[in-house]
Image 1 (cartoon, protein in one colour):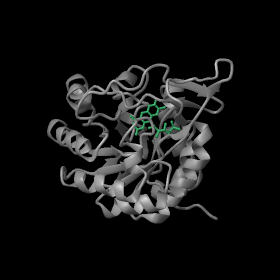
Image 2: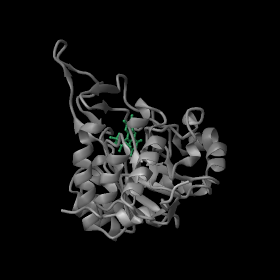
Image 3: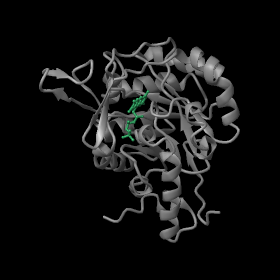
Image 4: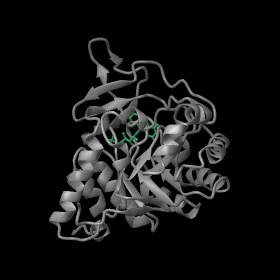
Length: 306
Ligand SMILES: Cc1cc2nc3c(=O)[nH]c(=O)nc-3n(C[C@H](O)[C@H](O)[C@H](O)COP(=O)(O)O)c2cc1C
């Protein structure tokens, strides 16, 4: 039994500990059921879904690189209705044991609004919603909309009208302080960051990209130090809670995000390498908190000494 209170509140989403899953790397939780105790996590965030199903980009869509991976999945998803039909019963049961966060994807403000309205109606068990305004793998909208303070605040303002439940806004790794402030102003309850960083990898024999598109999103240990810096900037720019994401492989990686001011963290690509990585990260984070001699993890939030 832990001596440290690990419970946190992510903008109205209660979490029994700070460890969440990064969207798109953990399916809808059910896929991991026979490999770990999914309900032990502080929250589970599912793959982003849009109002209508999306096929995603052509294969190949993933490629391993030094210290990370590139993906150009392009938000392939079964649509909100399709997701609820397939995973709704599982997620409803899970929501009794941990917070379930449903992620919203769209190409335009109207598409975000439509998807969120569907979620609000069909997922009464969701503790909150995450708006992905930062996917680098969709041709229009997505990253473009989330890459300016004006675009980001427009999406958030319109979505704010659709639900009373907590809204987490996931930022792209660009203009972080300005966009974080803008989405807070527009009504976000929390911020999560970072999404993948646009990158390229070329097979020099064939002179082609390893993926079906020239660019793809980089995730994994390679982006961790950049993500920590951006999370620190976000924490300094806003008063709402921040969830740190990027290259978390160990509890110590997660602890860096807490020290720069994050309330929670999400484990991403690590779950694709080691399915129960999130549980190990939780255990290691707790051990670190104990080693720091605190009785509540919140005492370590923002405790970074410059
Ligand atoms: C295969 C794959 C699919 C992803 N799908 C989504 C998604 O649907 N929505 C989203 O916001 N981020 C998505 N991401 C980005 C992750 O949630 C996370 O922000 C990013 O991978 C950085 O964390 P990591 O370095 O721990 O993986 C995806 C990442 C990967 C590797």
